[in-house]
Length: 364
Image (cartoon, rainbow, N blue to C red; front, side):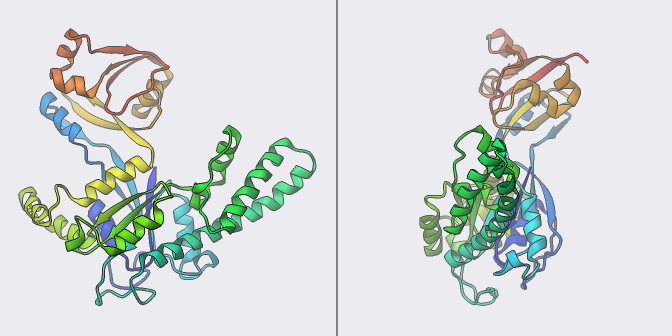
């Protein structure tokens, strides 16, 4: 599962990517400095794994990760191939969610591709390009489906109705994510279309250091604009975050954060939000060899969770032994949880809860 960072050129995408992944994508004050998408595998900050490490004292610890993709800046006309439009749009299509970076700071030394700072216009520029690309794809698909629908093909008729609804939405300059599928068939079809504006989105307002805690007038404009989108808005001073990553020690980083009035780096908040945006959650395995966070889809069953470790675990699943994270921490060990009756044995139907500490029994 990948989240792609998008935005206009020079809004801070590559600098943000560097903060998140410590992979040094080129960050320069000119458009199109990132031509190939850079992929960073980023640890998901989670205080729970630190607590489990403290209790279990394992040989090693493995955190959950999320893939972040740095995609070069889109410009007006990208849907028609302007700039490096086709390539960039293809890279976005391969991502599962979008992190949309908006410039919300004034700085005459950093060129704005459209001449002045206006996050509302910038957002609309990106939205329109993505909507136009989706519209082009929907209209191509409609041509084929109409022919099949005329022959009485029931699946084609259902698809044609949905595509027409999507087309009307896009023509109103609205994104596909604003459409709610009316039944399971439409949900499956929507998934199959892989439309760019159907992907969930998270807005990152890149502000100056002084606005990192409370935001500014630009952030207020963005919040007002997206209030009906069911999308999270995160305020981040990307420049300050870059400075934090350059500091050698944890203590130095904490002092810097305290001076800014922050409890933790904004990058940590963003990574957790991206993880949530991708509809991911975590379960843990805890033993003396390793304490590990495993990533699963929200709603995954015990056998599906076992399959993340190894496909044999899912094929030969017998049962899952489960302790809630809160119980594990409260009692301090697996043995004490058993004594207290907090050790559960679950079968194939069990839906894993975020934070479950699990052990699987299987036979292949």
